[in-house]
Length: 102
Image (cartoon, rainbow, N blue to C red; front, top):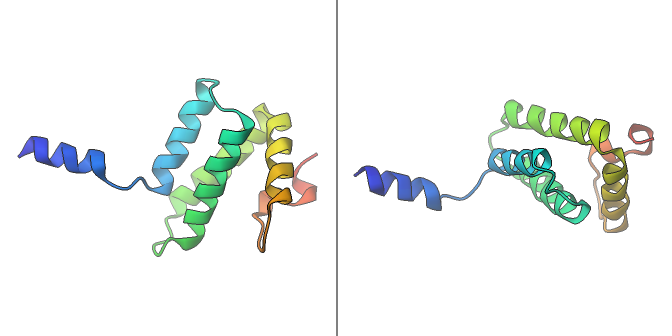
């Protein structure tokens, strides 16, 4: 029974929180490049916008992730913002506004 439960957990669909955890692990291990950061942030942002249940903890962690990226890797964040804006459609996240990045 225990094996069945762990296999079920292993095969479950990752949440936005799981993806934020992955982002942080890659960032801490210095394995995060601009393309990967952009891809993960786009997916996470999209999922946070679609989630039925608004989990404030996940939003807070997303905000902290952007702030951490801004503080420690400002150049990478600028590149992410530039690439995001190049492919942008409708709505942009607050951290993409020109006043937030300098």
